[in-house]
Image (cartoon, rainbow over all chains, first blue to last red; front, side, top):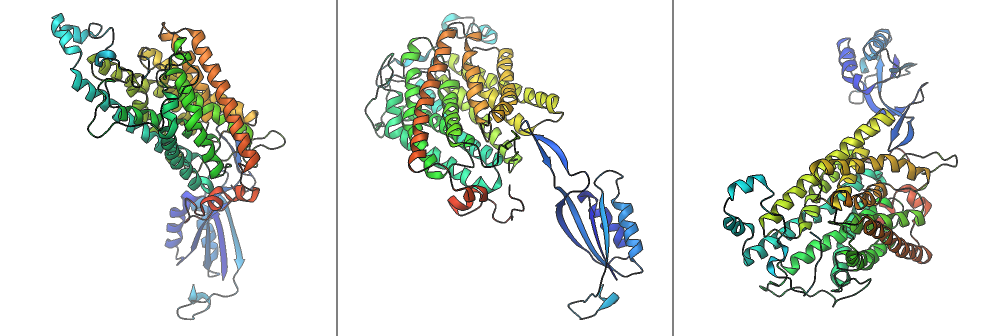
Length: 112
Length: 453
């Protein structure tokens, strides 16, 4: 099992969620986050003074997936979340040691 | 018309009739070929004039009262969310203190019944009329006049609260408001609207570009200088740390409310509605007031777009108010075109002066100093452009004298407060936001703040 964390542009969330649903991803956790990457945010003007918005708003997805499904999940997120512009985000994949469904106690792939 | 009241003096009911009525208006001239019929149509009879004059004060008064809500929303939107609750409390508190102080002593200082004087005081607290009584000698209800003058006094205090926001504790702020509304503002008013020395030398300020807006602006400037900037606002390298406001929609709503209220502020400063000339003038004032604000907005949008490649919403809001302040000194005599010019130049002033004040490390949170002080000076000096009866030197004298008097007294009061009970909260309290330290409740308690600013 893998644990996939993806940081994407907020307005891409619906599209990504739909695409993941269609390849069989059963659930995910979503949070609104802020952060920066290589661009270090951007500079704006407010009332005549410059300021850098060094933390830009993003959406973070967390998905637990079976080993078989993982490559497809990564590919789907990469393709649907891309605008081919700076700030599209990143995808990280971890090994997942275990998963348990709280209601039934099931573990492993069946708990996903 | 000069905005002057003689308390207890008794100008006859027709005293508000204006010269130049009727025949100058093309449509009216057609309808009234018979001069006798025209004369009859010009003025309503005594009782009706009394009622209409009083009605103008009441309508104008509650519109200006509502400007207190406009200031509250504008300031709530332009301060950070950790200070919004305190800013709201300051606004409703200052409005209330202004009313109390204006009754206790302010009105009696503002309208002392002198001619050409520097300082006078009539009986106080001000005795209102009895039940069912009418002061027909003045041509309007004295209570309606008092109410109308009181809300102007409150406006002056509103100007200060925005400039010194986010780093002044409640009690010191309210003490300053008490002195401002009970003494400083009334003395300035007595010089002009109270028939004092500025009025005697020909100074003209129709609805208060200098008397209300510059007075508030000077008091705010002294406060900002003596209190100092918000913590972390100016870095050692001269870099300005930007603290974006908590709510652009609230600030926009506040500006629209102020704009609406201004029709009362300027329109009802005609002070009379008992003749067709007066009603026509009030209508023209509405148009000029609106156009000056509109021009201020458009100029501010264009100026920020050209200078920064992006339009700045808060500057557009400041532009509306600066246009309104600029036209306030003389909203009647300008043509619509001139009103647009006066308001448009007004709208440019915040775009120029907000960055200049930041360079000087003068931390004016909402832009009150460019909007009310600088545009107020501009509007006052621009009066002779359209009203040839007003000498420029008198306008300049009024601006300077108001500045000297208000700065001196405001500085004394701010320094006295600073030296005794102190004006600022502790550093920790300021950084955590005044809401927690001063009111114990945040404006938006269901949203957890995620960053220090």
